[in-house]
Image (cartoon, rainbow, N blue to C red; front, side, top):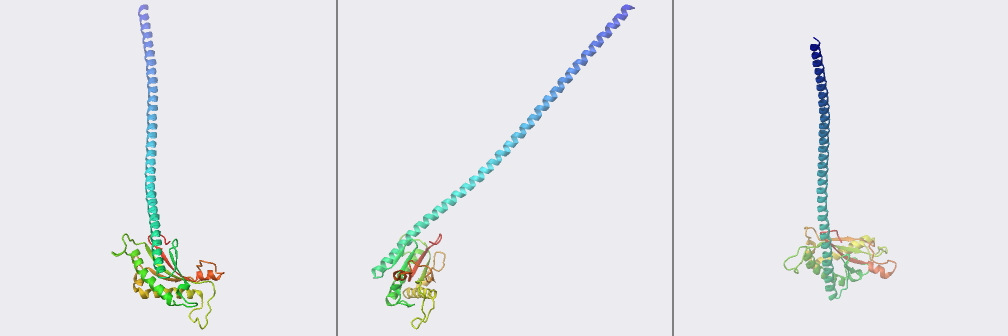
Amino acid sequence: MFELRSRRHRHSSESGDQEGYFVAFNDLLTGILFIFILLLTGVVLGNRNGMSDLQALEAALKEERAKTEQFNRRLTAAQGELGNRQAADNTLAENKVKRAKLLDRIAAKLKAHGYTVTVDAEAGVLRLPDSLLFGSGSRKPDHAGGETLRLLGGLLEREIRCATRPTSDCPLGSTPFLEAVFVEGHTDSMPVRKDSNNPYYTDNWKLSVERALAAFSEMKKSSPYLERLVNAQGRSIFGVSGYAEGRAVADNESEEGRESNRRIDLRFLLSGVSWQ
């Protein structure tokens, strides 16, 4: 009897130990699994963060590429604009040289006939003194002035045609570079006196305009085609204006200065760029 009970007690004790062992082992596996799950979660989260950083980097690179491409486009446009400006500056410089040569040719031919005029190459002006063209107080050219203007008209017809719409008979290499030619009347600052010798105008504005119109009219007598000359855009070349004493080239306090201010200017304006 006793032996049977002892066996049962030993069997019961052994079963309890085994159950405790399995419980402990199970708890250990559960703990290990929990730790594994935590580690796996960390890895997954880390991978997600890594993907997020990679995507952010790719987005930043894409944005920088777009900025670089935009900068390159702007740089190319700026270089093109700079090239155009440089080309325009070169054209302007070349056209100024052509205009200066044209004015010198006209002045030299007038001088060969005994008529002295002044050239302002930088401003593009051929300057005819009042004493060369008009008698004192007159709005019409005198005999010598008429001859000068008619000779000038003939010279201008050929020169301007070759500088606006060159034809086969123009010098080799002729190009259109003139926009317009203004016939300008200028006076000194002395007030005009209206009397029996001067019944036509009452102030220097009218006198300057009348003399400019009279000068152009005289030039057309030898060269009627002047009035029909047009530039490369098909617009009239000649214009007439009067400035009274507003564009003095000398001091009006002296007689010599006033004499210089009484004049007819032919102003040659360049095409293709700003008028110079």
